[in-house]
Length: 89
Image (tube, rainbow, N blue to C red; front, side):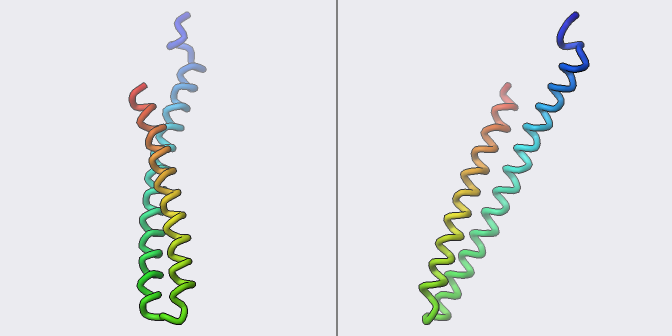
């Protein structure tokens, strides 16, 4: 019997396709999170200008947010690589 006709193999292949699609969906979400967090960091930096007495605290908060946004962008790229690898396979 040909393995491609085996229903178990077909189900496994479908599950793999769904997993790769999910990786792509999560990549898009990670990119959106990074964009929003970057916007929030920009807002904190703008507030730092308006409140010089708390500027150090606000800039530190913005820096932590930018670091988190960078991590999310890296995760987005990693997941896109997984998805793209599945497209090429």
